[in-house]
Length: 389
Image (cartoon, rainbow, N blue to C red; front, top):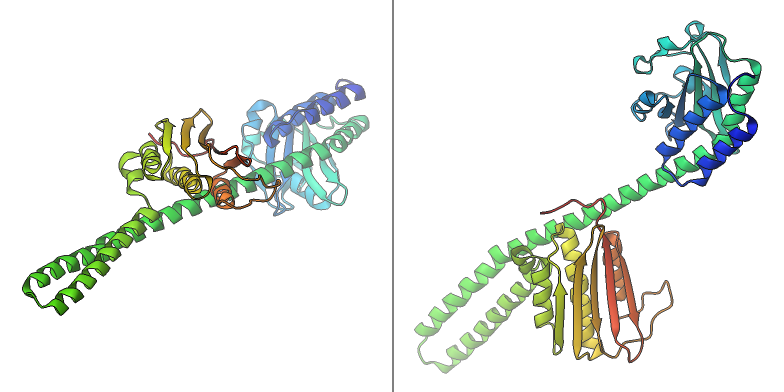
């Protein structure tokens, strides 16, 4: 054949694409360019078969057509690419204007090209994963040896394209799962705020009002000992209920988070957590509310562990925001504990902290040993998170 690449050059080009970890779009863009060079054609459109059987343009050469990737979709069986995907057969068309299967798409400037070869990307037991359409300006451009070369290219690229498609779909599902988890945490925080508001505006206000009425009744009751004793008991119950309501509000959504921010909230936790010296080194991090709550809760749990289990004299808390992540560290000089094997959460609330971190795409590391204290380190990635100023 005249023009094009030798087999050695073709294989070398395919190996270069396979060797580099790239996104689906990068793989298909480079593959389309390789097909054009390998067949001495004028254009290549590389379609991916979607899960519903439709074919979607996802890579092209020249670059002006590649910019249309993702915007052109053919229904199952529609157009030459759809026909080839449906029948899993090659189609060689000397003059596409005389072929009833051809569908004209203005954006792809079909009037500039007369002949084409459409080849399925076949995988054993998987069916068709994509379709390569190779176009030439002249009618009857593709001689038998060129058609054979297109088929050869398709065989070499099928596995690479399939791997890229599967990786891309997995990435999309992971992103959907991350968005679902983030949305779930956000909804949970919204519900916590609503319940806290209801308690504050309803139950708490009524309890406080009842307390004042009780004080007024006490002044009217005179010196009767029995009445005063009963009033004392009721006052104690109401005071306890008010404190419990305030604690419930703080547990649902600490007001200090909204009023002063994450750093001040953690500093307040450390100051009031327990009988140890608290050393805090906190960067002022402005984060989305669901991330702030997670960092706050992990800090709270780590400090509670230090109070209940470690007997620590000193607890150090650091919070740092980097370009791509936020890192929280809570370390103590207490008793420590025996580290659990990988995959087991153990006690001391480690499982709950790890689950909180995982929900927002973060990781939790706990380093501890008997007599050597404990370090809790949580890393939260910021990529893909909304920005807050």
